[in-house]
Amino acid sequence: MKMIKVAILTLSDKGSKGERDDSSGPAIEEIVKKIKAEVISYEVIPDDKNRIKRKLISLSKKADLILTTGGTGVSPRDVTPDATREVIDYEIPGMAEAMRMKGLKKTPFAMISRAVTGVKGKTLIVNLPGSPKAVKENLSVILPVLSHTIEKLHGGTEDCAGCR
Image (cartoon, rainbow, N blue to C red; front, side, top):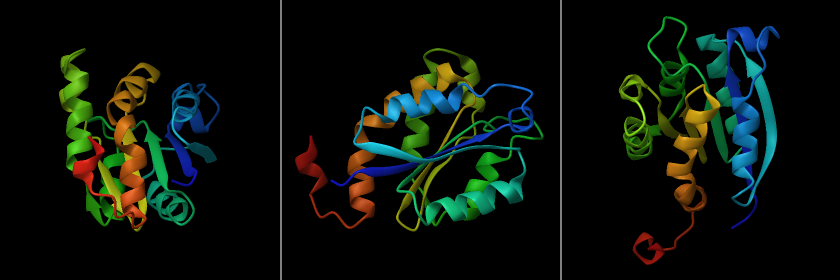
């Protein structure tokens, strides 16, 4: 497997204005070092649905994996899942379900996460929560399958049954 190109996109109105430090994006960067990956883009932008959509489309042309953080809840400004759904070709619901199941072991608030995981072209897009702690918990669930998933998206023919 080649080096995975990762884009990190933090969605935060306050963070994009410099009113709050982003600690989730750097947490993601540290975690993806555990797989054969390089971060090719890291950006903090506001919770603006159209801007998020444009950024996801743009990043999907150069990244194998886009990890977003923030905007997955139920407040009016939490639009990341909506933007993601409008951009992706199809969802991979098992990943988002697994992340929520892991979160529920820690807090009942995990059940209100609207995080989406899906594919745009050959790029995997994963919505993560906005807190560094939740980012670490959620990524720990899907990290073991990320390389394989991306390899399959790029045409890998290895049989999944042999991966166990």
